[in-house]
Length: 288
Length: 325
Image 1 (cartoon, rainbow over the protein chains, first blue to last red):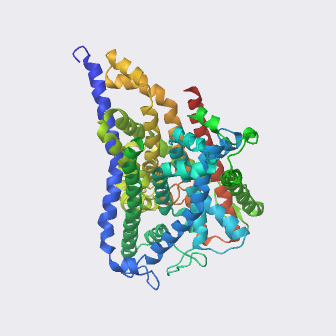
Image 2: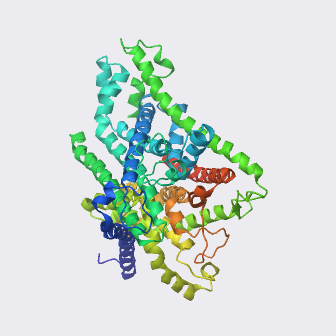
Image 3: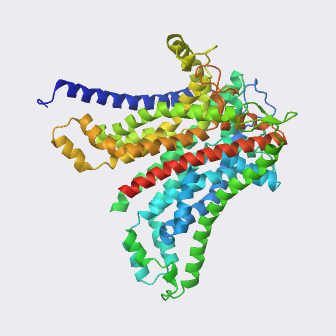
């Protein structure tokens, strides 16, 4: 390093500092958000919050809970997954195993990318106009699940596709050479080999839609009461609950919003950790 | 890999020429049909989104007594019905562009830190930490922005106004915590992870031989990055930024909670200005009557088209690069 002039060394160090600074700047909001959510959320993180709804509870009243919203989110996410997973995984199989670079698969691939960038509120507007306004169904949790499934599909397609592409061609050839039909090769050899990766992608996709608020505002309507039937009547999800409580001026409502945020973050982070743990745990096995 | 899979590929025009494996013929056709059907269904959904939004927007647009593209007020349920996208579209693009200006340099720094500065063992973990930023739901950012950030930035904005108020951007009648700049700041935090993640991938693909050659010729680390990594990653960063822009344009809840929902067209970033198409839909949907819903759907259609163009442009940059490489 002796031959390097002072000016060059200073520039080098200055850039090192800038880059480290950028990382710190990026992490500050994350720490701030997590810290405040935990600090303000624990106040109402009690049994009542998880066992009661907001029925007959005014925004100035203490107490009340998000049981109805947590239930709604769970039901909507399960329904959305039931719709999006088969479509997403089958599309990924078509893209990787059947339609290699033909026109249809290129078109699908392009529009999957476009769909990834679809604003969540637009998927809500679509379900509102198609399902509720044109077809005449009422506001319901299922309508919310439909709009969430549209947001979930492209994520599932992309992650599944990536994982299936990692499956060695030798495995497919070996199976086909033994006379196993192609579809059985896919179902019995290709998909099982890629399964841990597919599961990781699915869990991350679920984590993404669990926190979506915008479409639910448009198609689930709103309720303070427990509605365990996602197919009839308004239902509310946890993100909606947070949005609604945060919009009120009373500290009791704001406290409920923070606890709702804490609950939502715990759910989303747990899903993320589980998803990544599966990927990490299975990664060495694949290369073995 | 692709060439060898094409050899064993049974589908396509030559499939019928080859004898199908016994018992697999029908199963193969059904399975192929199902997977192609799923893909086609995806295309149909995209088409249906455009079709239904247009169909539901038309009646409201026909009843509109003002020019949809130049009017700044939003009163679709009034008599006469008057509404326009101008203020909303302006607010959407303004907040997103400022968010992009704030987020991109930081994101590129973060990406370089993870790809070229952090110790190899730590890099994966640090990348995961940045990805966590993307995992926080947008409503939580909204809550954080509304309750914590808005009061905190108020004095900072006041200071910027006092010192730099002579610049039109920072002039204001009344400096507000809920302003365009606050909204942009929250958006910047939310789009940073995606820009950082895509840039990181591109930087990691920069040819090692060039980097080693630069270092071998006596370049410092910064010189090596400037001469080999940045030129290689430039277009990747551009497409990453555009993906981030697409995300910012469509972001709803956080913006709805932090922006003051004003129908103004103004570059005064610190004033009580700022609104966005998505935020307006979330804020006013509950009170909208039939015509109001149609108007909101029309505004959603505009948002759909804007994000579609931005995302397609971003993908085209990526595809063109792949072709070059």
